Image (tube, rainbow, N blue to C red; front, top):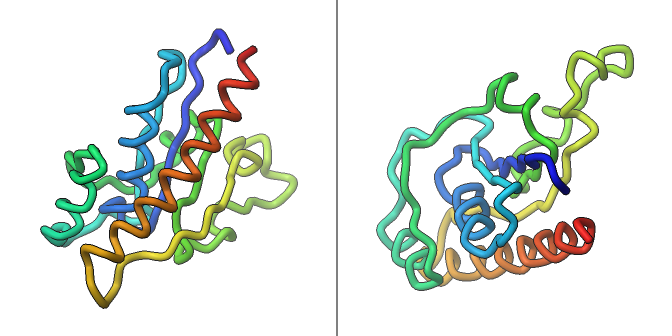
Length: 149
């Protein structure tokens, strides 16, 4: 991979799951030609729970920056789009076959179906979700490293 390769991690609000995935990927990735960003189906409007921030910090992941929503420009510049959520329908990224040229991102979408933290012990549930995301990102990173060789 000599050219820039862009990855977009997506969840519903770009508050937790997609931010965790992008921050962790950028932390472990050694290839400067690969860049990860995050976005939400819609921009989140409420702040993260302090337990989610602490859980992320315990894994060495800092959750920073404002939330942002998907846009056509953002989608179209991606080489891979990974939906890190079980509450973002795949159909959002589907386009009619006669429109694939206009929406090249459609064939680049992968779904990981990771649930959101909604109840219970927020800290423990956040840790479980972070572990799931880390495992998936580690697999993705290894796959990308193999494909560069």
